[in-house]
Length: 395
Ligand SMILES: Cc1cc2nc3c(=O)[nH]c(=O)nc-3n(C[C@H](O)[C@H](O)[C@H](O)COP(=O)(O)OP(=O)(O)OC[C@H]3O[C@@H](n4cnc5c(N)ncnc54)[C@H](O)[C@@H]3O)c2cc1C
Image (cartoon, rainbow, N blue to C red):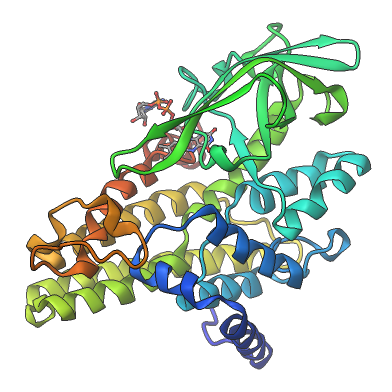
């Protein structure tokens, strides 16, 4: 495997870095580097800036208005953005539903939805999970009943990330009870401003409101907002999950957080402790190994005729474990300063009474709690291990 970047890749990286340096708002970058709370306005401001440049849908082909970058160029773009302190792209629109629309949507659906996703104007949510249907997603019960050219949808979705901001939600619904559970599912696009849609917050361990319950009561959805054939939604669902799991590895963000970990360790004095540095070095080795795996997968998918390496599950497991580990090491580095959980300390410019503790350490407890979720969402790590075992052992 060749590890050096070609001159054209280096030139590409320089061009992107120069653009990011002059377009990424400093107040947003300061929040990201400090591990502070990002508001909807921060995330959407950056999405619009990327959208205006045609870079919000980084993996989109040119025919759909994307930059047509190679997998390696996308990797370099993510790295440059993360190290500069850009917020991660909210994936539900540009990374998840857009490829489904490109692969399975009608030209009308593509024209209606893709421009708003690329421009960052329209916020999407993911309506897959339900109470009682998470790992066993095909047991979902939200029902869409056909009445002429409409569906009437009833049920409940849960864990809907950032659904409080959602304009639209892509949703798996049951349209038939015949045959296997997978065979009766359809993929619907639901306008979240429709009558009968209620979004209720779920507050997580870190005290934040990022996930929600979404209740659907007699929601009227035109049949032309169904993607793919009726009862063929499982194909779209699986296609989308592959994109979600690869995305979760997020090596670029991890590399930025390693820099932050070292900054905290130096400021708090533990960097002088060889045993602490050993722990950081071990993690760094794991990050390099993960990045190599990502690059190998990208290299395989870029080679003409080569079968892409099916490693989405592996990347999801290792990526999420590494993210959890760096939040643990940050807590260790900060020691007593990380112990109090001060919700307001996540706000930019908070000047509260830190009782003599290091203010920059106070957001660490929230981040530690928040990262417990990474091994659950996008398909739990236990279930990913089952899938990998089946692939390897062939059962
Ligand atoms: C922060 C967060 C954000 C999320 N965002 C979204 C979102 O935006 N949209 C959305 O649709 N969903 C979202 N999810 C839901 C997520 O995909 C599910 O939580 C996940 O798939 C697990 O389902 P569950 O919570 O129902 O757990 P369950 O499936 O009930 O699993 C419970 C436990 O049993 C284990 N388990 C289950 N089956 C097996 C098995 N066969 N073998 C071994 N162990 C097993 C699991 O690993 C887990 O530990 C989010 C979840 C979280 C935590």
